[in-house]
Image (cartoon, rainbow, N blue to C red):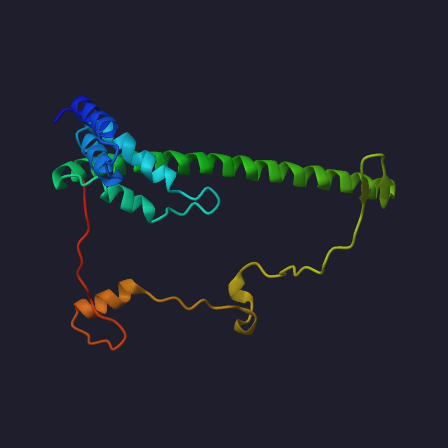
Length: 199
């Protein structure tokens, strides 16, 4: 059934039967959406996902899955649409990561610029023998910093172990190699799973 015919069916059902159940109209709406061209269906799925995202936490509500399931898409249609949606989301994620990297670099430069300005101003304070200046908008003064450790050796290996923190980290690659070689380990075993791919 073409989308325009389904639209007319929804309107007629609502107009001619005042006792129509909400579920009937929702079913017709789901049918209309399921017959949309792929590009429009992808846009609709993305709208459902975006609408379910909490703007404060960024978490996606499980209601998004319920709303998508309610469309009752055929498996082949769902697979094709999901592939397009995942590709779109992946592309947007890549672009946002690049943008975040760019803004992170800008933030680092701004921080470094502010640090240099403060250092230069401190040099001026010390050269002029000033410890405090008060202006109509701010007060600038020298304050003793917390004691900081300065190493007098060239490499960390010259520092005794008692003054070092050694990180203990599980090596899954070593565990996998041992298991594949036939080792029996009480704390781990190899497992095989499947995952979905698009091409």
